[in-house]
Amino acid sequence: MASKILNISKTAAWEKETEQSRAEMENIMAVLPESIRVLLESLPSKQLSKLEELRLRLNLPLILVIDGKDSFITEKGVLTVCRENIFSVTPQDMQKVLQLVSGSSVYALEDELKNGYITMPGGHRIGLCGKVVTEKGRVKTIKHVSSINMRVSREIPGAASKLIPYVIDRDKGTVKHTLLVSPPRCGKTTLLRDLVRQISNGIPSLSFPGTTVGLVDERSELAGCYYGLPQKDVGLRTDVLDACPKAEGMIMLLRAMSPQVIATDEIGRAEDVRALEEVFHAGVKVITTVHAASIKELIQRPALKYLLELKTIDRYIILSRTRGVGTIEEIIDGRTMQLLEVKTC
Image 1 (cartoon, rainbow, N blue to C red):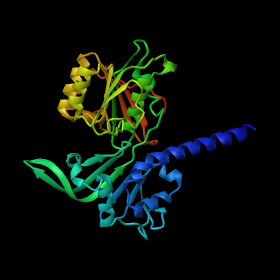
Image 2: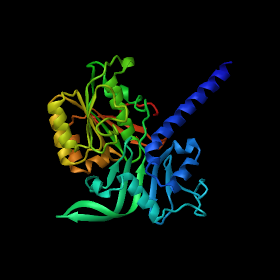
Image 3: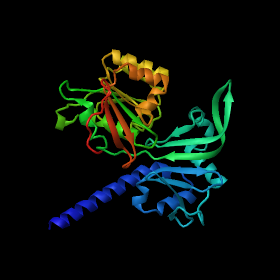
Image 4: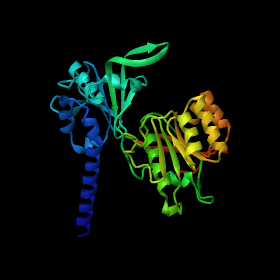
């Protein structure tokens, strides 16, 4: 009887995961031409649930990044690493994607195109390359698009649970200043989103009641806002500034929303660090991320080297994907720069 209950439980979990995967892919599927959509729909749910990126390059093979590895897809909808009978992206496919993404008006997306990407409902990001049009030395837009990269945004509730004991200060009932350090595609945005959700909602197991979080979501990836409404669960005490530059957003939240924690993604510029200083001086806690593989890499960037020298960050969390996306390699005490003992994560 026990084994039957276990099997039923596993089946229910698989069905829930499959349903979630399909829901997450809906917004991606909606902007794909039928020729590509049919191929993806033919894939097993287990493969589709691990899709991270979909790369379209004009007149070249369609590439699916699944669980960190590149695959081609045959014209019959089968994944392969061979270059025989595989699907290649046509000019018509590229045009159809742009038409569907823009609602048939690419000019309406000019403000987003100058950043090189478009954020879709659900937090999915579409990056574009092609002919860059400049005006007075600044990027105005991109035309003659030759490459499109669709990055799938996924929620993983509980993804940050192993980090929580290192981020919460149980004695003071507050959050520690935390910096997630990660190369691209190692899960930092997913972990940050879940940290925000748990800190906002509260963590009964640690007697942490929850706290007000101000979230600056410059690329609309963390909360996945659509017309200002978060499509991702970022917690019941979280206020979101969507599509707002990080430095300006942090100061706006500080002055207007009385947050106890401010969170944002991918800092790196000098103005970001200056805004963080203001947040520190106001007594508000910070959780943010940065692109790097190690502390050594951070020191090579002047603005981030200065941030380290402030000795304000309490926790540096180094991520990789050596044991899968979101692998925690190191947790470093920001005051002493000593490694903390970490269980395999």
